[in-house]
Image (cartoon, rainbow, N blue to C red; front, top):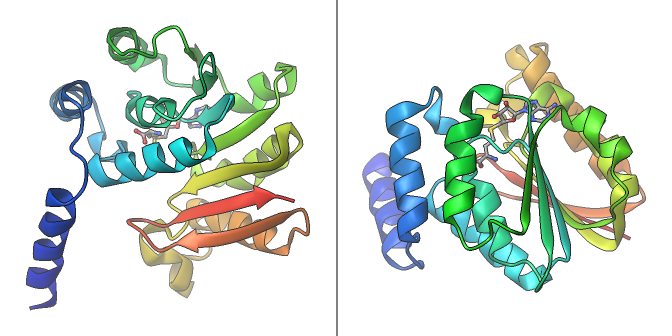
Amino acid sequence: MFNNNFNKLDDYIRQHSSPESELLQELSRQTHLKVMRPRMLSEHIQGRVLSMLSRMIVPQNILEIGTFTGYSALCLAEGLAKQGRLFTYDVNDEIEEFTRSFIEKSSFADQIIYKIADARDALPKLDVMFDLAFIDGDKRQYPGYFKLVLPKLRKGGFIIADNVLWSEKVIDESAHNDPYTKGVLDFNRMVTQSDEVENVIFPFRDGLMVLQKK
Ligand SMILES: C[S@@+](CC[C@H](N)C(=O)[O-])C[C@H]1O[C@@H](n2cnc3c(N)ncnc32)[C@H](O)[C@@H]1O
């Protein structure tokens, strides 16, 4: 019964939210056909949420850790200020060509700087202050990302971090020693204890931590 309603509600939400663009639909389809672990992709509603948050902020500079096939990057780019830029990093060079081809087909091709690099190496060398950062890389590295990104965030800027409920493992004590769950738990604790930010978990999909630098 609950599942039945859940699916119906899910359909209702999709039907009453803006649709994906044709390019995003095609990106999602091709990712599912051709790329390993397609579930990592942000889907329709999460994409619309990211787009809407970005439109509210109208960022000049966006940082993304974890490009994958570019779905979330293209959604976040929808909110960029005129001449704004989005820097996105991924360590996986196997899907570089695939991802780059979709970025190039989009209207944001000139604004998205996509690099194959470990964000932990690239960020300290980057002389840019960000208005918005989307953290969606390796969950074990989340605490490290937070330490690196916060100094690069302007006052009043936002960080959005995906998967902070980690399939509900954050409340399952038997999972607390696995390094992925531990990374997420440490990140959530670190953010909540920081007096440099205001934060809230959006209880949506796998949990989005949204925080603002004071
Ligand atoms: C969940 S996927 C990203 C999904 C994408 N943001 C989306 O919503 O469609 C995570 C990605 O982070 C990348 N990644 C893991 N560690 C990283 C690091 N240290 N720097 C940059 N990318 C990293 C992985 O290769 C993987 O493609």
